Structures are given as structure tokens and as C-alpha cells.
Length: 332
Image 1 (cartoon, one colour):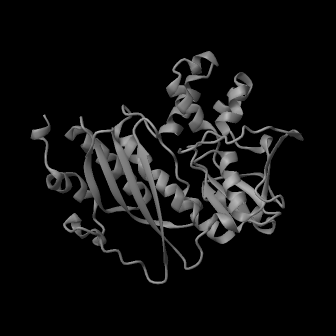
Image 2 (tube, rainbow, N blue to C red; image 1 turned 180 degrees about the vertical axis):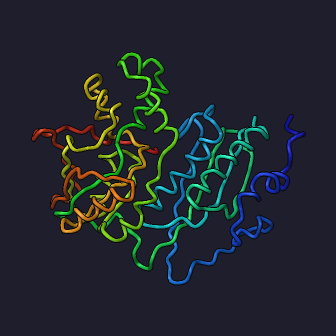
Image 3 (tube, rainbow, N blue to C red; image 1 turned 60 degrees about the vertical axis):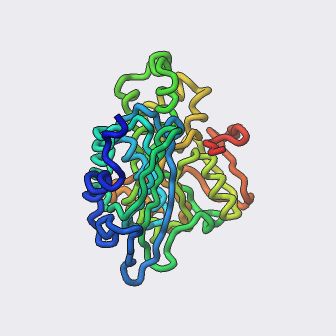
């Protein structure tokens, strides 16, 4: 029962203080953290809020919810070329929360803190009458003036994307429509792959230093490939030309391209990929690609930046591909 649950300060001591071993957190014993940037570095800050049954399902594993909340922020830092330093956590617990759930949630955070070398600095925990909500503010560091923005792309730059695109949206579709995978004869291994990609993004943190060295502009793919190409183009006041046949896709998406062609392009623009989209000057493109391969995070050339400010044009085998207007994930 609710009255038997530990109070706020007991929660902090039992579950969150063990995650806060950065000196700036002050052991979570004060009202604020005191963060001292490393000498000569700029701070990069980003924030994402995830809500139950909007960004994850209420019955997802607590470890996975925690990991996703942290990783989507790490993806933003990576796109800026920043190295993670710490994060603040806002947690609005659903009214039916249990200590076991919270223990597993914090275990998920702990595992990713070790994997991505980041520490909890502080935050707040409240009760929510509208389901679970997780808000994380992540803080990174980058050399002065070297943060990679959306607005630096130039006509002629080569457009790259990391990983594969469309898996997360396909995974979400499979969660919403449990019969989908069977209907399109998707192999079990491919079904597991798309479900995993939806639930657990893979922030491309190893690309961060390469973006600083090579990219004129970058961002992560969270709203959908074509939608985010449009965001980058608009910020940079250039256009984008994409060759759909070059967009990297998994074996699962290749299968869906044949079995569910009406869904394929929708999945590519469905969002939640958290891959890195980067515009790289042509003279740096080959070196960027080689170094990304050596770093264990291959990138694929999918197009070029053009002079048509704000325009996103997609072709496949030389033929224009019509994009749905206002496609991509929309927050409102």
C-alpha cells in the first residue's frame, strides 16, 4: 500500500545516491549539483521527456525504459560531438509504482552509466496521476566552438547516416499490431530485431569525435529520416537530395520492402532510429567513412546537399519518390 512505501529522502538514499558518484552531485544531499567543467571545454546540454504510452509502453521492462530515456539524450550529445559528463533525472512515478519496479529502473540506469561513462548529478521525483514520465537533462563537453550544429551544411556536402533506418518504426508497428509480423511472414530473428531497436536505441557515441573533425552539420534521427533531413536543410538554408536505394536498411526492412511496400517508406520516416545524420564536405567524406568504419560505427552515403533551400527530394532508381506531407513523428 502507498503508506508503506519509502518517502522521498529514503528513495534518494536507497536508489539514486548509489548512481551519483560524481563529486558535482554532492551525494544528492543538497538542492542542486555543482558542476565544474573541465578547463577549456564548452558544455553542451540537451533534454528529452518520455511519457508512458507515447514513447514507451507502460508494461515495458523498467530497465529498458530507463535505458531508452538516457540513450535518447546521449544520442543528442553524440550528434553535437560532445562527450557525456553527467545528467539530471526527473521522474514522475505512476500511482501504482512499487519498490521492485524502481529497483529495476535504477539497475537499468546503472548499467548504462557504466556503458556510456556518465553519472547522475541530481534531479527530482514526484508522483504522477497520468502515468509514468521520465525527463532527463544530459550534459556533455566539447572543445570550445566545436559543437556540431544543424546549421552548418553547405551545397555539395555529402550526406551520411549511421546504422540502419526504419527498424524502430517497424518495431513500434509490430507492438501496436501483434499480427503484423506473421501477416508479412517476417522471420522470428527479424521480428526480435525490430522490437529491440524500438525498445533500446543505440546512441552512436563513438562517432562524436569524428563529427567534430569532419562534419559541417549533424543531428540525430529521432523524428524520421526525411523529416530530420528537412530540419537539417531548413536550419542550414540548403536542400537535400536522397537516393532511397542507398539508405541502409536491415534484413528485416529489406523483407518488408518486398512484402509491405506500402509501409516501407513510412517506416523509414517513422522516427526513433537515433542514428546520426551528418553533412560532410566532399573532400573529407572518404576519410570520415573510413574512420567511422574503424570506430565500429559504419556510415553510409545516402545523398548530397543541394542549393534548393529547405527542399527534400527523394529518388529511387532515378525516379522521384513522393513523400507524405508533414510526415515523420510529430510531438503535437
